[in-house]
Image (cartoon, rainbow, N blue to C red; front, side, top):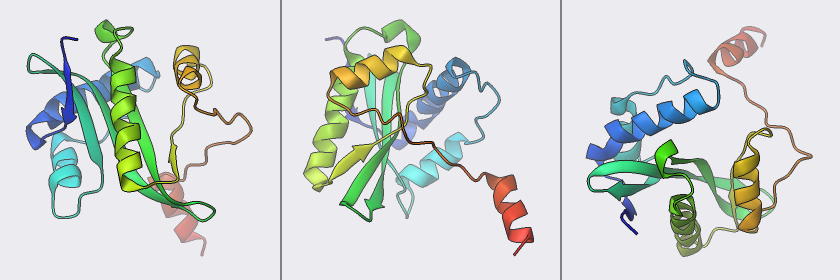
Amino acid sequence: MDYIIREAKRKDMAQVLKLITELAVFEKEDDAVEVTVADLEESGFGDQKLFHCFVADKEGQIVGMALVYPRYSTWKGPVIHLEDLIVTERMRGSGLGTALLNEVVKYGNSLGVKRISWEVLDWNKPAIDFYESKGADVKRDWDVVHLDEKGISNYLSKI
């Protein structure tokens, strides 16, 4: 193993943003990333910490990351949501995704959560196969629902 998995630091956020952008390109959403390094620094390391992040560090380069945040299930109780698990393209197949997911699961267990949840695109077969090989239950009968900024504004204008 030529990388280490560790908790992210504020100084890692520029490289984390590069990984987020790489994922957006992979998901054919090249222009969708609006978050900035400053946003990540404030949200992850400011007074109100909104997320927890693990990074894979290979000789000072961040080559993977997993970002989680707390949620609450009305049926189960405390949950964490894995927003993104990203491995840079050149490191895929190296075991890095497993190492990052291992940290997320250990972290969730240490918090006593009842579930770790996340989404995966239905066309991303390698990711689906990976998650299922780890014992995850990929729910194919649920649809993800988003209300974006424009949708929020439109909604509010009608009430």
